Length: 365
Image (cartoon, rainbow, N blue to C red):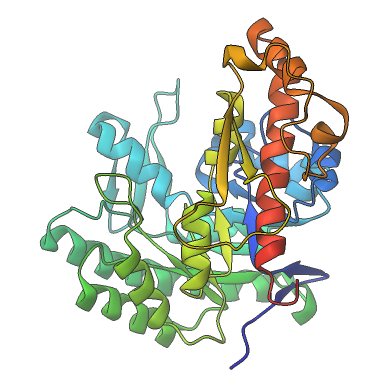
């Protein structure tokens, strides 16, 4: 079967592979919708768990959904919030608990606890006018015990059934035409246990979804990609279905994971690196191969004194608006001054690096 080169999402087409910056609370820090389009970003990932708290569901629905609220004409995928809840609750149980009913948590600065159930997650995501909704899942750490992973898989499958049922109910209730319905993705859990990954994947396939995501933390304790488990999880899903490598977006890991059959990637690392002075560029020549060893990737650490009087762009081969107009000497100055203009320009450059990377990987160039 020929590799998928695009994904149709209502009236939009997402060219694959695609890197999505994290717009967790409805925005990518320091840049606006026009900025994102100017560096060829096609889609954003926003987070239900955070959006339901700030600005709140009633505010988003007042504006007619996230596209209108954020003035974003591209694709929006809404993550259910399972990973964020996992991170928060595992930090301290005072923030909330995971139960078979759903995620019970206390919003920041509030006394009252809220329940994010599978049904509520789907209701919110469809109400937000998402192009892809993701099932609520019970996320775990890869090193969690087998007992914990078994509970996670059982709960994830149970929640997925409830999500799919609510998804169909919402589409029917809202009388959504077939060509206007958002896609729905299930998330494959199972930690580092191949048999549990298989159980989760087979259970989700039986329920039936438009696409699937790799669930759980994808890196080991040394920060290296869990290639064997990432590969196995892709092999468990027929190639006709798109796969979202949730949380995978380091350039080298993206190339590796694309080679394993994944199509969609998201990660906060490129924008976070930009803010902290680490700018990405391809090795200084126009022709190179994207090998898994990553020898094509270089970094410019903008705070380095050697850039004070450097009048070259970050990369002479980059077509981003930053490299077309500004020197690393100027960026060094902005960084040292702590000005927000540095953050905007650096973010734009790193995002264009990521879209150039995925464009180079695209099967038809």
